[in-house]
Image (cartoon, rainbow, N blue to C red; front, side):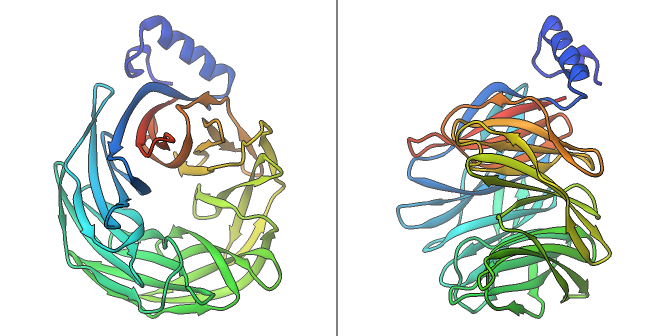
Length: 361
């Protein structure tokens, strides 16, 4: 554990109490710090966020009047969040997503009538929007899912408006994006993905014919994806978060209860362990979000009366640490800034999107 003096913004006695609590819970605590800041103006719909450094993060969102997608950088100093000037990415657009490339660049996807992608360059809190490209000329349905293989290669997948899933590798050279060969799978939807390593990703989707959820490893060669054998994961949609190249945490709700399971990848074989009940509080399975802390832990925020907690893996099952109550209303995103701090984005019910800092120890 860190020394008492290193626990951000806490008194000595508070720090001692945190350490004692961490020892008793196996070092699996996530505690709302009490700091929260409104990030974006009213009438805005949150899209996604990612950490840039341990004291800086970026969010993308849609400002409803005019349906314009924006990005804004926020910095943290002495527990205080300061929000920079928003940069407009595209009008007549929505459903943005974002993935980290470097501390000064991110890739953003968004939907017009098709899926588009653009590299944002970041200096301080100033954002430069570079030239966007069309990823898939087919009509789109909702937010694309993206994750980085490397700082120059990103896995992409989206739900096609007419049905099915289309996936590709996006290659980034400087601020220029090149789209690899599209791989289409019919009778599918509700896609989620995580990059496992530099040459493979796990894709989860709903088989609309069989009414079951499938998992499949896509392997990458250059900018070409190859689908391997498809496996049944469960009858429930999972939020999936990577722990390592061979293990992913799946978070899902059944009858109001939050469950978590360990999904194992052995080569291209996908299997799921037994789900563990994490929280049976009414509405605990609403607004489930996860972000990797390290190879054994995931920061998880969830619930109709939202809480944050750590999910830990022992290599075969997943268990939940103590919960910490967040400001109301609904969790819409989160990011891990370091192994000691996370940020949870909350829609407060009054058209505001607020960032709440979370201490991890």
